Image 1 (cartoon, rainbow, N blue to C red):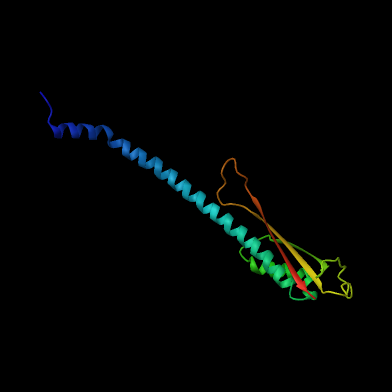
Image 2: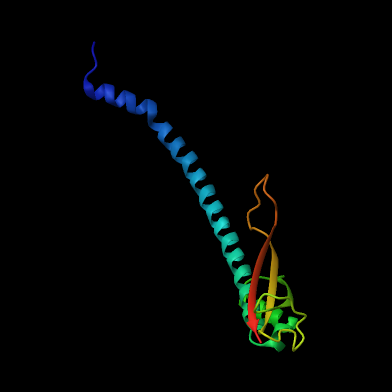
Length: 154
């Protein structure tokens, strides 16, 4: 006896009914893992931007005048205040001088008789960032760096 169309469709549906559920479960779990990875990548990117901005804030504080350019404690405080969401921020700063006409200077007053002294403030920041999710084959922590260089005319 031949089967009608309804019986054929019902038979095909019954053979593949569990396959859709398995595919959905596999792709759903893969999608969740992908979303978690994207979230972690976003956290690392945000922390990296914050470390770079902290270096800029420290350099902006240092370039206010000649006294603040050598105030490494104030520069570190300005950087830490800008990166309040990060713990363990390390800040180092250095200053150097050059004459505005391109000749070298020791930062002493009178070094640049025909031009102005340009004080250069360099601020380096770094922090160790640990992601919430640790994936095999990837490091358990990342060291993020920021650097800013600003000139201050005297």
